[in-house]
Length: 247
Image 1: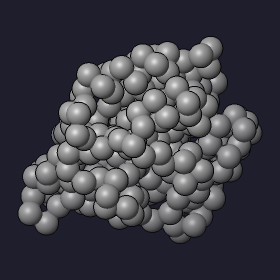
Image 2: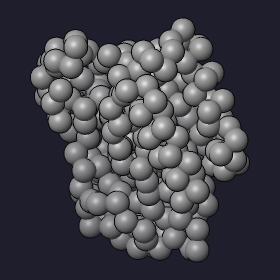
Image 3: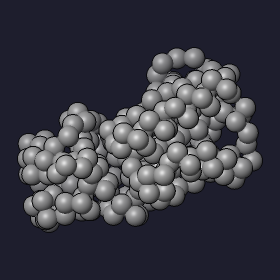
Image 4: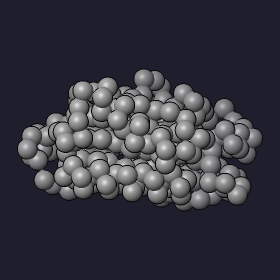
């Protein structure tokens, strides 16, 4: 089954197409996490549109489908990043995803933006750095929320459930808007003193002194340019949500 993932929560627009292990709505592997992890990436198109998603998103979708040799009618589920993030970008993505799902007869699934961003560091989800997803590492996505705040959440990398699987994420805080210093406090409260912290998202670049520098040597920053929001990660997360909800 094909899953189309859309993320326009930031200035970057990303669309990914993933084939997950489903057969006529039945789950081949019943565990949602394994469905998501095992999704084969067919194509992904990511572009810094400068928040011009209203004019760019449909072109990104067309490019992604064309690169995969697929048509909209082939898509069984449209997964869309639902925030937190840019209100305008999210509105454009939600309206577009709803229209595509209705027009193509696909299922529509919403995916938390920060969850998909955090999952993008995992091997099998697009991440290629094993040290960033080592069990015990805390993944802390944060996005610029403007007005002196960031949208943030925290996740910890856990051991794989299956022997042939990759690490998984466990959420340790809910999505929320924080002053940068307050986000650092949350990280301190939710993170063991000896744990490494991986920061990603444009909030880190917006407030480097307040976040990364304040955490010192414990923190590692994945630049926004090297690890932007991923439509493929949204598609994989959507596959897991779809599997959990049943056919």
